[in-house]
Image (cartoon, rainbow, N blue to C red; front, side, top):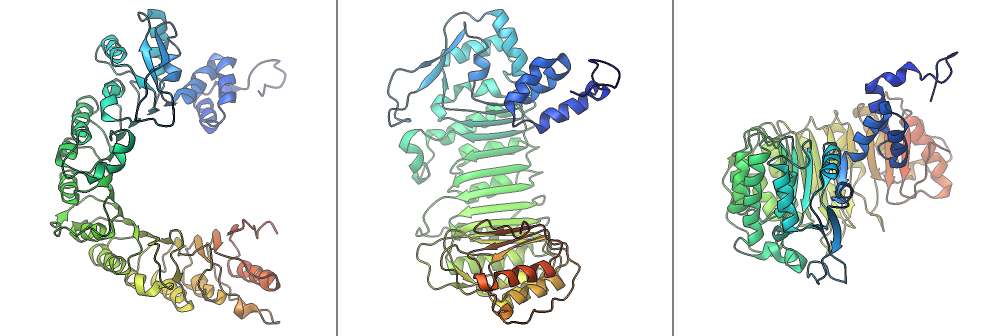
Length: 502
């Protein structure tokens, strides 16, 4: 620690500024050992260090360890089908009356927790009842803001312990335990866990009415999601395993401030398509994220009207007609306001010859004000990107800040010529990130050095994927790109070769 000149042992005045100390502790949140040392150094360091150390808790082990004579973690002692392969199950149980000194210490530290992530350790029902009685209606973690609860519905009675008026974000996974969770979405009618979601939301609403973000694993039955309409401050809604898109759409329309809607649709691509969804307006929506069954994604996009939509993120299997329909509908429905597009084309495991990039995504060229375009081909779904495609992208999207186009790791299809990047340098001066397949170095293979037009660009990073150049042209290609994008600082190859360091 620095000291004043001429003042032996006196700390520098900067260490008396609480905001500075707190910021230093936050910047070192990853170094828990050093934070623990700081907590023992002085009173000035102790408070900020403890706040960072206790801000996030995974399970109750640390808190209940402060009450060793009252609560203990013990094996359940019986086999449990939720945990195969001889995994031991533990539960926190009450072993004696709660001692006031231990309770007071635990309460002090519980006030520091901001995020709680549940683990597999259970809390005995009787122990939870005693704790609720001891709390007398007060939350166990009174300053909790983020809660991640992932226990089957029949083990979730202690949920009430964690509900705080300051709670802003809740992630609920109450699906059945064991193998039953893997077939949950195949039930045509609501299961017990679906009803449990409704009960949990009712409980959360009574204790944490200002919730802003909800993430749930549910098929989307009304009994599970209707109570979401009671959360008038809800801004972000994420639902997984949805089989009832019409009910989700209806519920979303009741949320007056919804900004982000994320849904993963469950089901098989071979199932018969349902009836068209009713057109629904989501007037405040800024971001729409959809994945899962492609035809359901297309149907949902067709039904949504979102006059303020800024970003669309879609991901589903590489079924050509579904993707073409979806891209066209995105452009038609949201083209006036859309600024970010993020598509993930997932492997169909039956991909033919490489797909045409232009054939799938050319409708996006009508969106002249896009800032971010990210099109990924997950696994090995191949796309041919031609020199003309690169020139079309550069001409269509002059305001781009980030451009990422698909590539595959093995046997990539023929790439565009490296000189096509000149059109990007010329027409996209604000572009900062470019991720592309390794281009064809053919135009640089001659003996003469190619003249490079000077353009003022903001390029920060170029990622060259799916292959490398041969040694005889590698140096020329590297020098060419450096001249074309002189401000670029990071060059990432698939083999982690760093051009900047060379």
